[in-house]
Image (cartoon, rainbow, N blue to C red; front, side):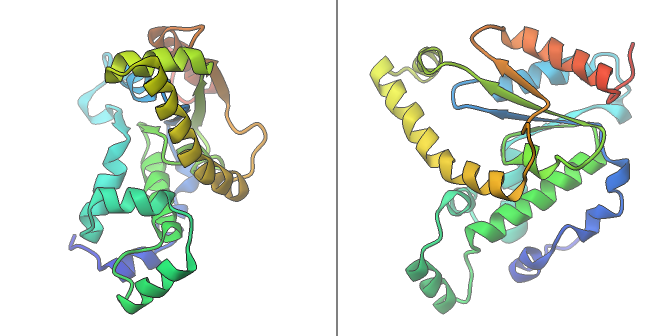
Length: 230
């Protein structure tokens, strides 16, 4: 398939995948607080799901790959797309974009397109999707499970300090900066994707190991009928 133009790509809505929405999944979405190792939990779950699975029925995990795909299709750097996705709209920025013929899409356009990609992955099935607003984007689709990972700040400070080679003070500042950065997106997603409770499962990562959480998610998928019991 040839590469779509940016304007055509950003005009696309969800209709291309909605016809198959009733046959979605199975899929898992994992949302997490900064420092809660969501991708690592996803990798452990991936190993459990693929243990003994046929190659043509293997599961895949998606995180940064979603932005990579969008960057490839739009000829824009991932850093630009990620920054625009998180950025609050500014009138003067929009004015200069209009002068530049809209070569850089707005945050809303990027978020909408990421939602389209995520829904397509969920409908295709056997997908573990990390972050990117995936829990909200797929909440109405059947045969999926949404998971949220949280932990007390002090616990996350120790994790980030060890992982990134920081002092605990530096790690705490990084966590709080990330939380401020994500708060704008959280408000947008809460307004757009209304569901109470927002997730099927919520884990305190300070109480369970990553392996235990992955095992529990697998068990919940079986109980919910997302995958067969075996």
